[in-house]
Image (cartoon, rainbow, N blue to C red; front, side):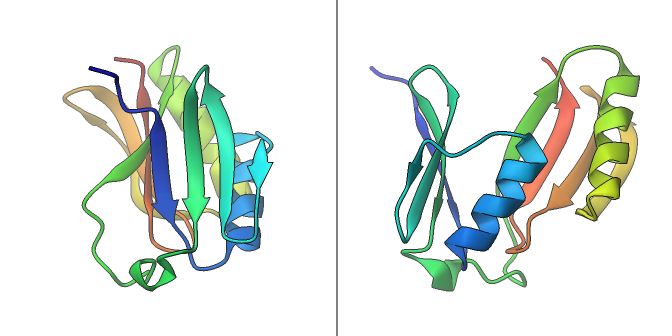
Amino acid sequence: MPAPNLFLIYVRDADAATAFYSDLFEIAPTFISPRYVAFDVAPGVLFALWTGRSGHANPRTPRTCEVGLMVPGPASAVDEVFANWLAKDVQVVEEPHDDVFGRTFVAADPDGNLIRVSPVD
């Protein structure tokens, strides 16, 4: 059976979300349409933004999943990402702390989608 290869995030404004994620992850989109934007994040794996269901992108809606960014290196590497994102005025939901899997923090995009930074498993 094939593994999941598309991770889709609901957003209200494709242009604003594209600018946010391009800056946050320092990557450029590989496909752009008026309501759907995709980023190649690994061979055969896409991270995409979709406004086709923008009603689901209410920032006050509780989120039950997270986008994950696993950072190689020591715990201080997670703290460096945190400092970089603070400089970009990213909304912090959970400050850096040590958890069972290592150093971590959680941020949110303008639509309330959660982004967890943690060490590589």
